[in-house]
Amino acid sequence: MSTFEETEERRELRKAVAGLASRYGREWFTEKARSGEKTTELWLDVAKHGYLGVNVGEEYGGGGGGIGDIAAVCEELAAAGCPLLLMVVSPAICGTVIERFGTAEQKQRWLPGIADGTGTMAFAITEPDAGTNTHAITTSATKDGDSYVLNGRKVWISGVDEAENVLVVARMKDSATGRLKPVLFVVPTDAPGFEATVIPMEIVSPEKQFSVFLDDVRLGADAVVGSEDGGLLQLFAGLNPERIMAAAYSLGLARHALDRAVAYAKDRSVFGVPIGTHQAIQHPLAESYMEIESARLMNQKAAALCDAGEDEKAGEAANIAKYCAAEAACRAVDRAVQTHGGAGISSEHGIAGLLVATRASRIAPVTREMVLNYVAMHSLGLPKSY
Image 1 (cartoon, one colour):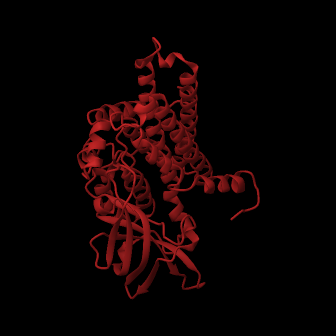
Image 2 (cartoon, helix red, strand yellow):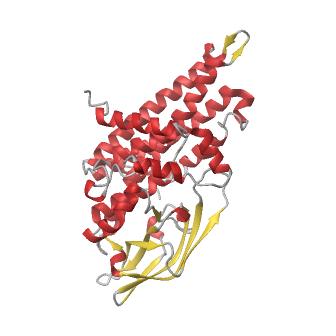
């Protein structure tokens, strides 16, 4: 096998997930989203077959695989028109952080539910006045005896209504230096003082976005994941998987749009020949294919580095993969709409709804501009620009 190809096991995993997702499809997914329903049936079906927790340790009911495996699952679901956004959050970010830094008791308490889909966990880092700047987070944690008290506000938090717990990034004062440091807490969504409000969105998605308010939320000492002094290391352990999963999500949507465009270009005839005969149709679709394949290869590299524990190298590759996948997805959907002509903005063909979904990938979970800043500074050695 070439080192540029996935293992046979990974390819079989993709095939199995694609087969499962095909039983649902884009029309089913869109109907659920438009009617305000959830895609819990698919979520639990994915979990039942062992795909949701494929990256979680076997001792916790998972498959014992790596981030590359859960990324493959995410991509294939999106390629079938059924993107599950919470896969980016629950098994990838939260599952990775807890398995890497949690106590034995914490792992046993939370990982089985993450793996079987019954204990979904959300992730809360973004704040209204901090945005991408994690150093400006103001959500505070104060120690009170054996307890912690959290106060603050988070925004753009996915799937709070589907989660039992939220992994919250707060800041505490270091008793030795007096400096503020990030600390990770698992907060039950039914905790007193925890409130979540839906943010109205234009995107057609079954997963909702929330503003979260923490008003004197009291937690026990066992709510802290990892060390109080772990700092950014523990936080960033979840951000490389986040970017890899975001890339996989975008790549799946890009593949879905391209497949739809190619099928239409073969079937639709104008002036006596299929429109796919013409280079004005062929070339943009061929460009999208090349862009998707290039981004997939970079994401494969990022996942391999992440699974190997090469966090610094994985950081560069994961950021590049996320950037390239988002760009590829936006262009693929735009080209799919153009290929369909007027039909591309109709509800019947279901392409136009992907415009907002893919456009969001240029913003979240990290903006394209911040990725460019990262590469300029860390890869090229240019002065910090922010």
